[in-house]
Amino acid sequence: MSGKQLNRTTNSLILILTFGMVWFCDTSAASFSVNVKSIQNVVVSTLEKLFGKNDITVFLQSEFVFQKLLVLIVLIAIITVTIIFYRSRLLPVRFMTTTRISVMDKIVQRACRYVEKHYTSPDLTVHRICEDLVVGTSFLEALFEKDLGMSVNQFINQVRINHLKYLLNQDSETSLEILARSTGFHDTQQCVKVFNEITGINFDEYREGVRSGVSYAKKK
Image (cartoon, rainbow, N blue to C red; front, side):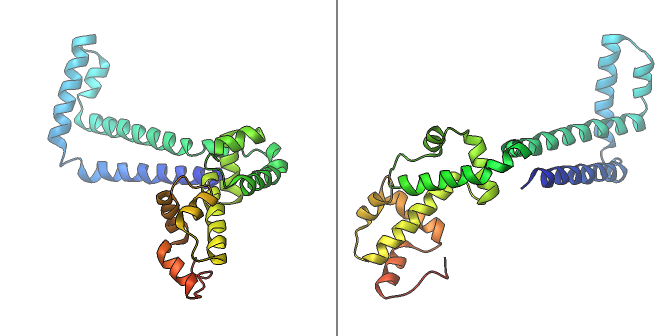
């Protein structure tokens, strides 16, 4: 999701929350009048003990005023939490400034070539890629999400599975241990789990399909 989309989403949610809270106040205030009155008494009495009776405490003694004020406070709290949540989603996108546009594709291409060259290493991680390419982790992740629609780790796994399928198509009797080791997986369990997640096909089922000449290219 782009920064503009998140901003539009945030503004829409704030608008919906505003109307929702106003509606809630108008339709449900009577149902909660007892609870609101109890809260009002506690707040007013506390303020009077701290500051004595003044214009503010007199003003807050109006149940209608206190109800509206309480709803306003809750509304502000909800809007604040909503803004904080959606702004945090913008952090990976903050690097997408116009000064970076000219180098985006080049960095992604370098990272992709690096993965293609080192995918057989079980130690290949986004941190290792960033160290060797001298690029920030968050920046590279943001570029991959924008240009490829996936994280760096997802791309690494995609490359590994593509090569695994190639090896399996070359020799359907290749053991799972050799396939996993040849494509950079730590063990066969991780290999099978990632294979199933990416292809949506059970590994053993895929192997049997290769043996019998079934093509899964269109099913992936």
